[in-house]
Image (tube, rainbow over the protein chains, first blue to last red):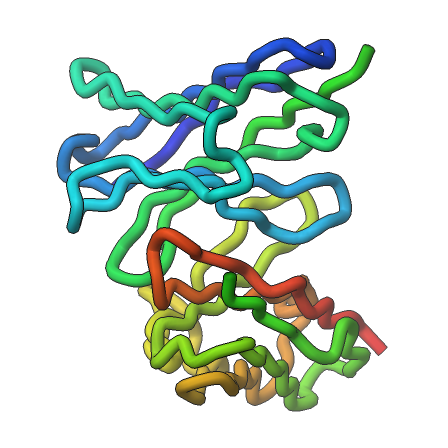
Length: 117
Length: 108
């Protein structure tokens, strides 16, 4: 049974970067398509990007291009999402989620990132 | 970008009643539509994928229908644990994946 465990909450100042991790257990990361979704307080879900197995590359939502980097450490089956140039609007819960066919069927528990001066 | 519009924003019903949630796409997404349930403080949970297929472990009272631009999630008889927020999501293009704004199903 695949499980995703994310790193703990972060508090960052505007302009800083944050790196959130997501460790996979029960499967090998190389055989999975990992994505990231965020949710601002009281708001809906927003897709940030993820691995496209059809093209073999990581794709990013246009809104985050140039500011987000998604990487994987296959030796530890851990995925990472780094968001730079943080602003207050980036305050949100960040989720990792696994793509299965056309949806996300396994989710991490979420990581709260607070951006505040 | 394909915009998904969910309605109503809030649905007030009693346990045992039937819930009908709508998701409309700004252009055709074929059958590439999923539904999720989210409770406070929890991650979303996949209910339906490809418009009408229930995910593993999802009770039969949840059903999805539709194709193209109009989709429906139906909960045939609400259980106390079904009161939550529901989101639709399309992936007609994996490079432009979007979610709807959500429908809150609350206890009347």
